[in-house]
Image 1: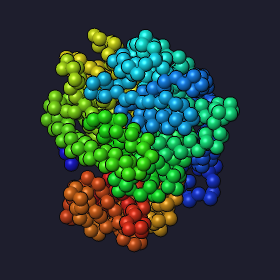
Image 2 (image 1 turned 30 degrees about the vertical axis):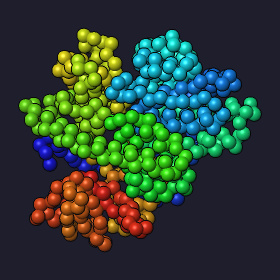
Image 3 (image 1 turned 180 degrees about the vertical axis):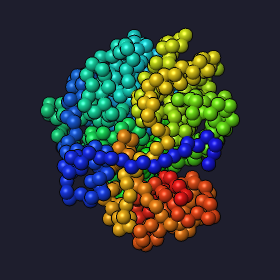
Image 4 (image 1 turned 90 degrees about the vertical axis):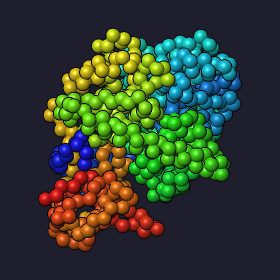
Length: 578
């Protein structure tokens, strides 16, 4: 392990006995304990669409749907303004698909080139959109901080409806309607809803109005909305928003459709190039295999390719587009590996002890690619347990483009805002949400910004928080380490941000070890209490000492599918040699 790696320890979660007692008795005892450890009430053990928060309860959806209804009747031009990440791409594809199925005749979409225009509804992208003539623009996954861009759009004859989930600034844009679950004036009961979730809510209310008016058959509305749940699941997992009960419902329903083979040709093609079986799809497949390939287009070139893949109904064309995205993702991985190594070298070569003296890390290299810095921030956050902002040069040589990733318990967008307010230019562009944000910063202010961000993060973080702790759901008996419990844990998901996948810890005897795939460790283990030998894998882990015999491991229990046959497997997150 590198010198800047974070020391880790294992602790076990506690649960409220009353919460545990109230959970359904038909669940596996280990599953009941896991849910109790996460404080899940009995009413939230079955994530079904019928329990979704009412679509009309999201403030602004009815007004926006009514305005869209008018646009349909008058044949207005509709422009969907998307974003260049997976949440924005799925939100764009969802709204375009639904509008076209609902009988809107003039629907188009645009996505800002991140390298020319940056993020969101800027005055420059408003001018691009206005070239097609006046009409109605609907933003998805962006717009809540676009005061000047929204004003410019209005000057050019584009009325704007904003749908977004990012945190608002003090002044709201001059849009005709704003839908955002995080509006301070009217917070939604699920503030974790992401961009594609907001788009789904708007499409659902619009579909209801059309059906009530007799303009679209009720069955057609239901089919259009249910047919987009695969996109909702993908965007929600990819954006790493907390999986509260409402988001768990959306992801669970999308995964059910994917496993039933009811997924779009574009998404099916992405599963194929990723080597994943949609009939056994898990949230982890969406987050670690599908989303990176979709995101690669927006990181390196143009997210229009990714959206076109999601919109494609021709399997052959979808396969071609997915292969293109797969190639871009391979380029992204090579570039990311180099940049992560360089970021580690920056930490290793720092004169300060970055692990103890800095509450947050600001990293910059003049060679870095601005489409990849978010991934670098994520990797270094994982390695150090600290919030990280990674910067790359902007197209303007005087500016840097930064991407921030946070840790549990810190709203990184608020930390950026507090630091920016103390800079000479408090009008700097930044935005985001609790776990991820972006900022454009003059290169001359990087050092001062880093100092201010450290101060603000140190003030906001709970001093008792230990970033090196792995929280375990407890030990498992030898008889539990099989397909039965592994399957029950899968069914209890989906797992993800804010609803972590179960992690267990036990002591084992090491029977065998070998390196596979270059830097992964394949292990054969024996439970200290006996039982059959167990298959295990530790990703990105160096070989253990030759004299290692007894191990304390933190692990996840999964099903490893090979040639149609499933076997239980321990995915080891941490190893201590006893």
